[in-house]
Length: 411
Image (cartoon, rainbow, N blue to C red; front, side, top):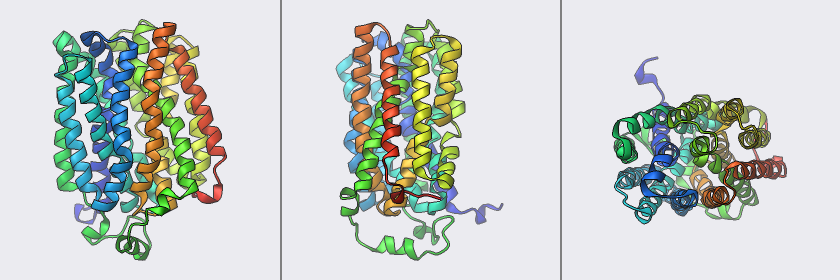
């Protein structure tokens, strides 16, 4: 296929995936690999480690709603570029931290930048891809987080082996520098809507509906008065609360509770990343075929099993199966939620709707790390925290079951 005939939506999808890689993959999940060394370097216990994660996720929460709303009003391109720039700078500053307070400030700013860039870039998929391809596109975009797991799993231990006590600082400098480069790329490549390129969304049969959405006023009431959107938000809370416990303390638990080395834990982290590489694409596409509701229920049940296995099967085979199960479904829920927002409210209001339900998601993931860290310090093990995550995932499946099928895309 000649480049001149390549629909620009594929370019948007490629740079969008890399933006997710920087905003979430490095900005949030990079912390998982750096945590044990950073914790030692700053003299933090597990409760402090949880507080540090909560600071980052609270920042994300603060911008989740505003980021989506600003993207709907001013366009995703400007908001994404500004957010990703802040993410990169604050990650580099995290590497200069001399104590817990400084680290909390910089991690909170990283979260703010992540929220301002990740939510709009996921909403952008609804503008560039027609409804039948939104799950597919969102599924590819969320794989940016998988790339980070694959890369940081082996590289962070390597950096630590070279720079010893300064390794975690060097890691943050590298994460931040890469993210700043992606912010520059996003500014030059991203476009807010296919009409800016004289195109219509990929897969659209006509451009009538999309052009109408571009010219009509923003109807905020469709977002904030929609019972379906509120219900989706509650369901999304369960994902935020459950998965972040698993992701934040995955490596730390393997090292502290199972006596894994940093390198061995990193390898398992990388394996999870490889298995998660296509999870969003697979499950997003599945949701295009069998419907968002049924797909969400299946994924939540798999998550509940993965988290529970990690807590109960305290052996290498148990940890590996858990990592594979989670990897196979890891980022599928955000992909499905992004596609669902486009289904329910259309491409113009999709970023605002996604931002609104991400507020609920953000509350869950902001609360969970501090709770899990305190439990680990009190009990002397992370197992009860992972069981809590499994129970919350089960509640997510139940909440999804109660969604009205008529309000979601069913085929």
